[in-house]
Length: 193
Image (cartoon, rainbow, N blue to C red; front, side, top):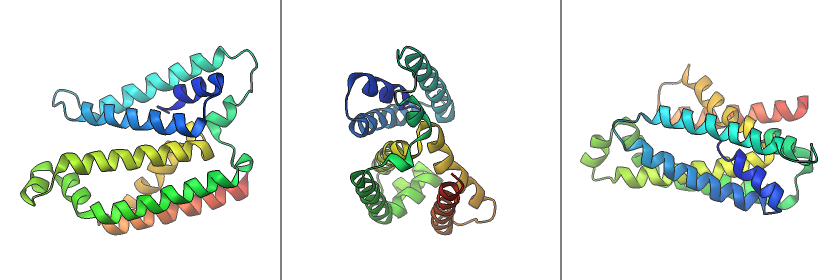
């Protein structure tokens, strides 16, 4: 949702949707990361405010488009049938990059997720783990938004993980089965469409 206003502006200005989405997602991730370090501001609150505000701003910007349907629907809901081969190559490259970086930072992600003090006691740098995770998430969201739209990205990233979390207690299997469930849901969704 957070990149939606930037995508509308890019559409109106004729800018690259992919490039604009990546830049906007990275900026948003860094802002949320900085907000999460403030003890008086809970990170969940910052995320909720940013997502709600961004979606509202995007809706206002879309309403100002003179020619309705000029791509606004594809920004919200994606357009999997309108993808070029380059879009699929970029998505595959981001998926591989995400898997490789996640494998390299796995221990740090887990340690930082359980507690910053635990991560620091293991000679880890929690700020680096946070930064890498936020950047991976930002790029993944930006690329996914092009394919499935701004509104459905949160469902792709959150619902499979939350569902698997109901039956799996360990982090490693949770990550693997979350990806498997997301892929299965994507195939079923594509088939149903």
